[in-house]
Amino acid sequence: MSAISGIFYRDGRSVKFEEINNLNDSMSHRGPDKSSIWIDQSVALGHQMMCTTEESLHEKLPFYDEKSGLVITADARLDNRLELADLLNIKDSKNLSDSYYILKSYEKWGENCPKYLLGDFVFVVYDKYNETIFCARDPMGIKVFYYYLSLEKFIFATEIKAILNTKSIPLELNEERIAFYLMDINDNKSTFYKDIHVFSPATSFTIDKNKIKKEIYWKLDPKFSIILDSEDEYIAQFRELFYQAVECRLRSIRPIGFELSGGLDSSSVVCMSKKILNKNSNFHTNLETFSCIFPNFPGCDESEYIKKVVEMGGINSNLVNGDQINPLENISEILFIQEQPFFTPFMNMLWKMYNRMRLNNVGVMLCGVGGDAVVSYGNKLFIDLIRENQWKNIFQELKLYSQQINKSTSEIFLQNIIYPYVPESVKKRFRKKDVKPNSSILDSYYAKKLMQRNI
Image (cartoon, rainbow, N blue to C red; front, top):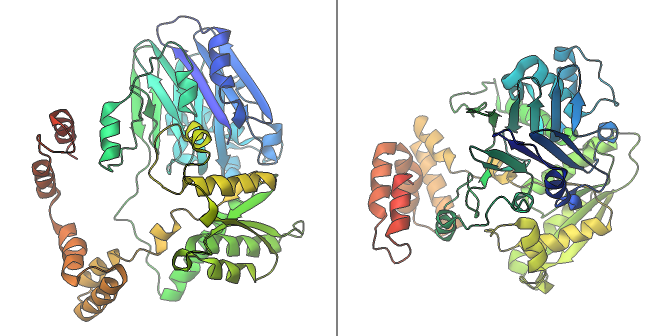
């Protein structure tokens, strides 16, 4: 929830106080606890802080370390503080912030430091002696980071509106991004504003007055596998990793709210959190869950599953009636926060639920977004069964899956079994043929852009 911002004039001119102050102040809604800026000639950093951990209560950002000449601003939560403490020879203490660990990691490992960090983070370090800026974003892209980069300047912020608040950057629409949006093509590098970009996950930048160095410091290895002796061991391993993932996110000084839809992912997060917090002798209050229900539309209402979780006890259930929510209500406020068009038609329901959390003083929210993509989607099972030559099981699964999604078995077979084995070069060739300059959806300009990008 915190926000970072900064200006680096690569042409050497000095940053004015009003410039960085306006940039930082435009995100004041993200900094209820602290706000600060740091300026040194052609570089300025800003920070709006919302304290969520005990360690953040002692945090001062931007932070300048006179000995090393390094300055940092960050929106970060680290989950491997103890491991870093050993590697950096630091005695872990509640008085040491997560950003301090990041700064010391950069001091020790330089541009390789993100590889040693585990958690959700985006940070910028300015090296005063070498006049370089280093930026990095976490591998999953949980923390947000936008930027504008030219030969003369580098401006970054947690929100687009902050960058646009600097008068030197023109407000122009990115027509190519609009085309991708209308075609339901996900482009996670650009924004709807020309020359304002999204900093990619698992990426780092090093910028000075003359050059730019970009590096992807982490990639998922598709060939990596964990081989255990039995299914029970896989289950135990998954439970242990899931336990750790939830436990580290319960590190909060603010009341925690849980988004509970009744589905497998959010229900698992709530149940695991309850198990972990029950072990904590200092935790004596009930969990607060927040759910949207649809009593007038039983076909899409998950109240029954929500109720089963709540009936475990120790849970206060806060329900929002989705049937009574106008999708266009509060649209101005939602667009102010979102800053760009969005795909989900349910944003107003989330808005109502988050407002209910705010009224309950919730400062940290846990949800299961994306969890079903890890454990619930079974499309890859077909490929695994083919490799094991289990054709009888394949046809059984095809039949069941066909009934579930109302598609023919032949269509599913082609899409999920044949298509993955088609060479990428062939796929690209067909994609190009599908883009026609005389398309009724896009004109020739957009069609040409799509072909150039091999989409």
